[in-house]
Length: 381
Ligand code: 13P
Image (cartoon, rainbow, N blue to C red; front, side, top):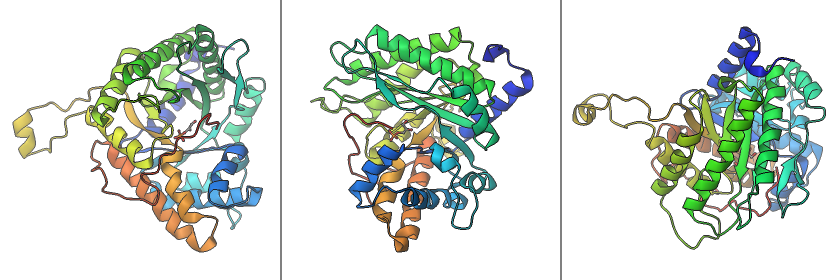
């Protein structure tokens, strides 16, 4: 098997074109790939039983909003079960997405597992049969994939062992996906648990990215055919100090600038337990640093910028909780609330689309659970 960077040029072109479509201007990704157990936690908060049929009904709600959200959503990440589920009218969800120009993706990791000999650090399972699964998923309509590794910040962590292990696992996954013409979303998530400040978060983020890109290079991964999914650089959830959204945006772009090669088409952020509104506002502040926001005529006369983006990669969203919290609460398992819930999804998608352009006005698109803190300890996808 050739390393992915030596794949035939038509395969590379396909990978790069999928990756670029996923981060097209004003668009981002809806992460709806929660595992059965994780959906169960969300359902228990709204009093819905975690059955196959209720999961299908909820995912149907999300997927059939496709005609409305398509201007803002480039791709939806699905859980394996959902890839094969159909609407009430017997149409596969993947076909509903495709017919609306939205790319279907799939979570291919099999969840976190303790990393022996460490304090609470993890690796991620799923490499064993990944090649066969990817070849099947591609045939069944998935053009991109997601694999989540997590690292945690404490006095002793992340350890070198966890850094190396997770970077290698991500690189092997990425290579296998590309061999199967699937764009890998490479996700090394640094968790927000802890009382660390923004500076510590930034240095850990840089260290993690260093290891990940070294491994991607060693494993011959084709960088124009991946997307990086990462956390925004935030202070720990129990940090006693407050930081502004501008501080967060500066720390995030600083960490990325020094570590992410320009060949990567885009960085897609997870929301990581932030409220819907905070995630949108922070994404907006990050993108406000991407380019000058002068309007073509009068303003431009004043600033004289050349409007070149400050960073080589697109900066957009791939939110799970921060796109679905209001939808879940509005729906609450009731048939008569489906339209209301779809409206909440549309609002959040529109807000985040504006944020990818640095054009979101904080508070301008209120939603049911916009300000609810979505953090949970030991969040497992
Ligand atoms: P969030 O709920 O943190 O946005 O998670 C998105 C995701 O895909 C994590 O893997």
